[in-house]
Length: 225
Image: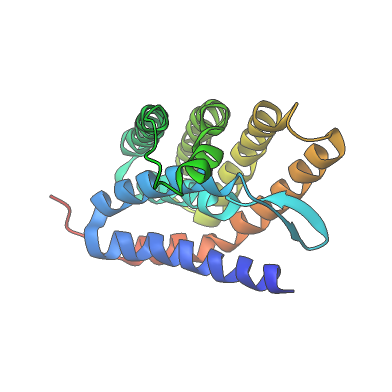
């Protein structure tokens, strides 16, 4: 049960981190969180673990926190601001990938012991980045659009509804796109299907559990410049 316990710890840490970023730094803090999460989630996803009897890739929680950030920005600053955060994440991931690919081209010194590890981690990053960017752009924009539409339809009421509907639908789209682009040809189909099913179940749980944090963020009074 150690993995399940650590999963819960990671969830509280990530969602708590979003709230603290917003509390201390306001809107800028949320944009900073997008940059942090989009990089680390794409590194975490390279690690597969057993959770609740299934095989899945890490990164679901941290990646899910991006949708929480989108919903906070949509709710408090509007659709335009949320879309800007999506493009920040897009830019950060591209630059990170380019910079690290250049770094891998350097010939390591004979004393270097970490170069093979960096190659293992970031050598596969271009494929992960392509899959992630495609899934991220499409699903995040869907999330922002659905959230904003439901907000207008409900006249600003039922925050829990637009939070969960927008996240669950966009996460499903994200899961389909990312799983196919990132893992086909890398793992057997049995593992790919297991990763897909488990990832979405976990994302479903994450979506439900992020709702109280969205309500908490809404209550925080921030004076942004």
